[in-house]
Length: 125
Image 1 (cartoon, rainbow, N blue to C red):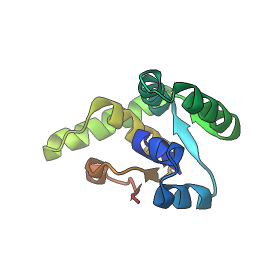
Image 2: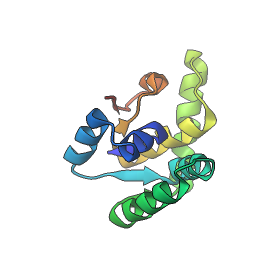
Image 3: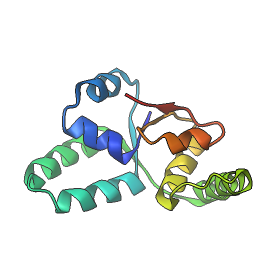
Image 4: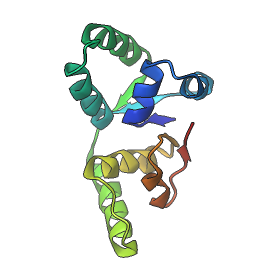
């Protein structure tokens, strides 16, 4: 399972439903895009030290997914599909969706606009 930024935040904040899904996953992966978004948010948090320590421990236990040439092809496919259907999504979310398609993994997210992406299973909580 791949985490979106809102899922990562929910797990960090110990939201029970999100933690339940997270803890039951057979594998968890984190897009480098999500890592950047989350670190930006943490940098502006009053709980910065606590979140940074938690994130370092998480990163040591899971795989961070990089963007590569294959990802760029998936990005282009998804962006074209969404453009033709008239349902664009934010640019960072296109990259996250591309990684999900590339790795054939579901996405844990509350963002329903991911439902418009073909062959992407979104797991909400």
